Amino acid sequence: MKTRKKLNLAIVVVIALILVNVSCKKTNTADPANNNQPPAVTGVQITANTTFGNILTDNNGFTLYFFAKDVSGTSACAGACNTTWPVFYKQNPSIGTGLNSSDFGVITRSDGAKQTTYKGWPLYYNVNDTKAGDVRGDGTGQLWMVARNDYAVMVANAQLVGSDGQQYNDQGALGQGASQYITDYNGRTLYLYTKDTANKNTFTKPDFSNESAWSIYVELNPIGSIPSILDKTQFGLAVFQGTNSNKSQLTYKNHPLYYFGGDGTTAGSTKGVSNSSWRIANSNTVAL
Image 1 (tube, one colour):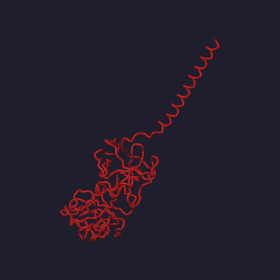
Image 2 (tube, rainbow, N blue to C red; image 1 turned 90 degrees about the horizontal axis):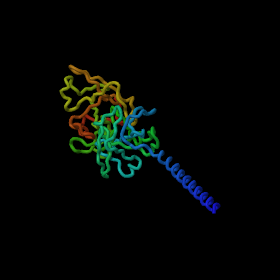
Image 3 (tube, rainbow, N blue to C red; image 1 turned 90 degrees about the vertical axis):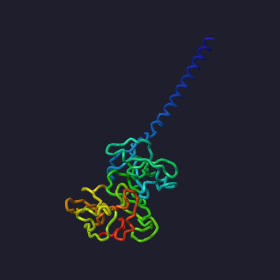
Image 4 (cartoon, helix red, strand yellow; image 1 turned 135 degrees about the horizontal axis):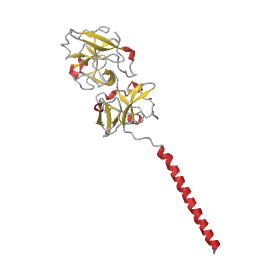
């Protein structure tokens, strides 16, 4: 009888040890999986990158990008495009040091999804960036730019439409098809005056009385960052001397750059192209 009791007790102890061992294995198996979960995306920050300098990333350090075709503030990347360039969206994102919450917004895409914008430009990831610090999408197709907060100019790519409602190409002739053109950070188109000479503004009056039509694009020294699609060495500054004050005008390939009053503040508007003495500026522009 005593032997049987001892045997039963031994069996109970063995079963208990087995159950404890199984429980520990399950716990140990679950822990690594939990530890491998990436931290939640909470917002946007400026991150120092050894190649590109200070860039915009999410709070986990994954790079964000702009798309040149989004100049009007709506996303032109859909379907298969979004497989490579996933949308970045965070409701009420945390904003890192050096950024202003007023520069961020939200759009509703054509597919109904939400997307976060910065200074009017929708933000994206690149699927080839597999870890924090990767910047493998910059310059893709001459259309994609790593996001920064300090660009002096941006690159747009869209159909040019003049104030007459006609479609134009980048040479100022009637024509269909998207053209590359340079804008300010907010997507306002920049133009060159075909009668200017190298680094010499010949349009603006000394009293600035004609600036309501075509105004100087002022840039301070040093010049801000330039998208890698363009050559930063081709940008410069020219001082326009007015009667009572001077203005530092950004130049591209020695062409002084201007805004067109008819565009107002509308991102992507190119109404100035129908004026025969004015052109958009892009990488095909011939230097003075």
